[in-house]
Image 1: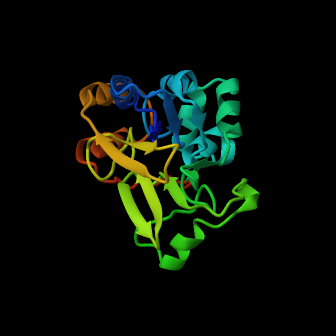
Image 2: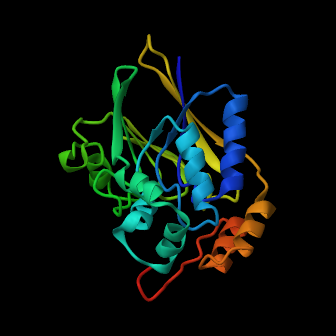
Length: 244
């Protein structure tokens, strides 16, 4: 049996990341795949990046990782950038776009936001044509297979949809869930001797007060909005002169 722990959108929330890691260890899982957005929004980008480098077996790039590494220069990009070393920024900037692997005789694709780009969002209410297109090859991002299943992140909402017989799964967010106040991650299990798989969503509590205290003790931008998101699970839209 192949068992994968799929994490995403850690967003520099160390307390939530460590709580999820402890749960993964209790379950005896050794394969930890992180689908991007290690940094951004939260107060401890260096610590979460170091955790990822120490424990994740596969990592892909999220839109916030690209922004913090240098793609954009908003205040919310500049602050975590200032907390990371040049080597850590190079690491974020060099992360691959996606993963394609065969499990149980099917091609599984793992990306952060969608198959069309880091800043292109795939929603549960996207058109059927757009959802089907997300399984198609996109060689410019190294996506060369006709995928049979898609696992992604970015929306911070756990979901599982059937798109004309193809699973489209969002693993939810560890550090900044917006469908709950509880961190979410995904366990995928594949039987090497049959075409079956299982997908299980896990939620757990964590020391949220610790993370709020770390944010309030920092000089990071948009502290109020970040804390409100942790407390309510509702997106607090933020705007700055250089972009949203």
